[in-house]
Amino acid sequence: MDLLSISSAEDFFPGSVAGRLVDRLTGLAARREAIFRKLDRFFERIVEQHAAADDDDPAAARRKADDKGSAGSDLMHELIDLWKMEGNTKQGFTKDHVKAMLLDTFVGGITTTSVTLHWAMSEHIRNPRVMKKAQDDIRAVVGEKERVQHHDMPKLKYLKMVVKETFRLHPPATLLVPRETTRHFKVGGYDIPAKTKGPERLERSGGVYPEETDIDFNGAHFELVPFGSGRRICPGLAMGVANIDEFILASMLFCFDWDLPHGVRKEDIDMEEAGKLTFHKKIPLLLVPSPNKAPN
Image 1: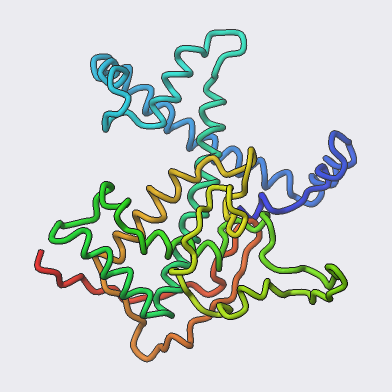
Image 2 (image 1 turned 180 degrees about the vertical axis):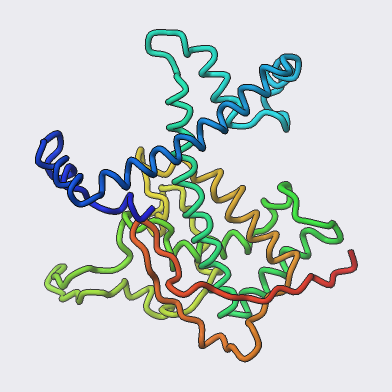
């Protein structure tokens, strides 16, 4: 992720020999090629393993084709099926296309998810009221079951607001619309200082109020656009939020009670950000989990 955020000379002089030469001399090209080879070997192994599994059990492959919603049918199998059907055509879907889509999923989904969960737990531990309310809501919905199930997720209204508030305070990607002014300017004759937000947000500065962040962030309401909007909206929004961010966070809050290590106060938690394409906590969060003592 750090390498993706570095501007290369070839970005400023595309297609030029000078740009490629500068990248070679600085070592940037060599670093890119090394990472490419490493990822390519990894994706090649994944593709071949899935393809071999289908070849070894054609009957299972046919059942999978007949039942696209089955547990054995995943994104990887669907991409391989498409490759096998169109790979021999002139402009068909090739193995390189499969690996390219895996790269998009790998890069776009892993870091942003872990960063969001990290920030959510950081804000929870600093705001015990929010954590208790979220846990009470989750445990009331899940009841005496052993774990959170996917069909429980639509009922967890407060958790969804918690995730939205996390996106408001700590958007996973840094290249979207800024949340504060970057420089001083005038609007209708009024001075707007740099590094400020709208007055309706001032009272919330420094606090976490999920109840006030029940906003649709699918790109239609511009009060909150953590994933962009329009044709450039993040294609993994629905899967990432519903199946990863919300589900994992709900499971963590249901299964465990969380506390700080002995002697550490919530005021001691450093919330300084660091990063480039994504902003993570500069100092990692350290928490102590204890199992939920529910009747089950």
